[in-house]
Amino acid sequence: MPNVESSQRRRSGRLSRQLPVVLSGVDRDGFNFGEETETVSISKHGASVRTAYPLRLGQEVSVRTKGTQRVGQFVVVWVGQPGTSGDGQAGLEWVEVRRFWGIEFPPEDWESDE
Image 1 (cartoon, rainbow, N blue to C red):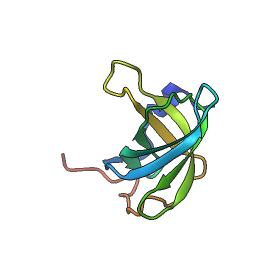
Image 2: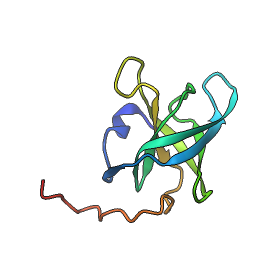
Image 3: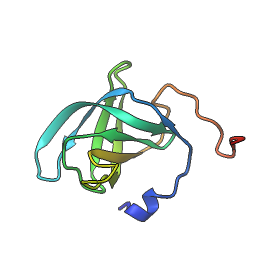
Image 4: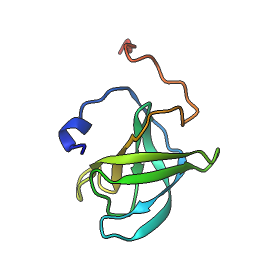
């Protein structure tokens, strides 16, 4: 099961993108939910999303893009803590990595001049 330490190691660069998505699954209290929300950032390996639902580490959720209607399965690897800048957000990682966002990401060894 993923933990907070492993989620802090970044395998790929992140892009700050607010893309409309539908997040669905079962919250940590056992209730089914479907929520129209948006991404905060995306990467080749996952995304962070805004959510009003209490999620738990290791649980699977579905993400459907509103524009292309693509659906993907993700695992929750990070949950923002109340009172922090991450409050109301969750970090998601692919169950099986695939092209999903419709964006070409830079190669893994690419470095910015900044």
